[in-house]
Length: 281
Picture 1 (tube, rainbow, N blue to C red):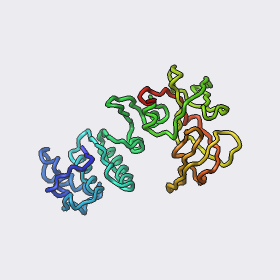
Picture 2 (spheres, rainbow, N blue to C red):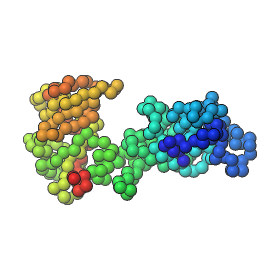
Picture 3 (cartoon, rainbow, N blue to C red):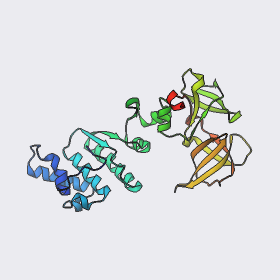
């Protein structure tokens, strides 16, 4: 198991922490030593072998914890939010190493995280828990494109969700919907709703939103409320009227605050679902 807070033995060196699971395996001293030395090099901490945990950074301690979990060469490794205490750069670097090392080891990994991007990047299958119950278990792509309920949709990231005025069948599993904020605009969305029309809402993924300048033309009319540079480009918050807004709308171009824009929605990134009573509250 790899713990969130590392759980290394403070009185043991890095080498001895990693060797601990091998102590009672019946392997020869030479085999155990070779296993430990190999893991030290694989996780990039060979130069720290004689250091103690209190002399290491958070990322280095988590590498030790990962090597210790791999040392026994068992079939199942449990990860309890192992990257939550690390900064963004180290999280990304160690995430890649965890994925590579566990697959190379041929072990099954159960990985607990509240970070959906981390789950999608690491997992072959993702399970979403709601109040202790498993509400969806599927591939990352299916969970993102066809969430089971509104909790899963929100947890895996939406730019916005809106009340629906009218809904009519379209084609091939799509619906044609209108919103109170734009009664004259038709929006095409994936049909994931049950028969209860009163609780239907439109959910929009940020990946399906695009912006263009101006107040004319097709699409929803909006005003940029905020804009932030994120390195790759710009993320915008766009107000659509009556308190409705879209967040994390990415564009390689910057749209200034208070600028009038038109918003286009990709049908495959929009879906109509029923809102549960708990979420409506």
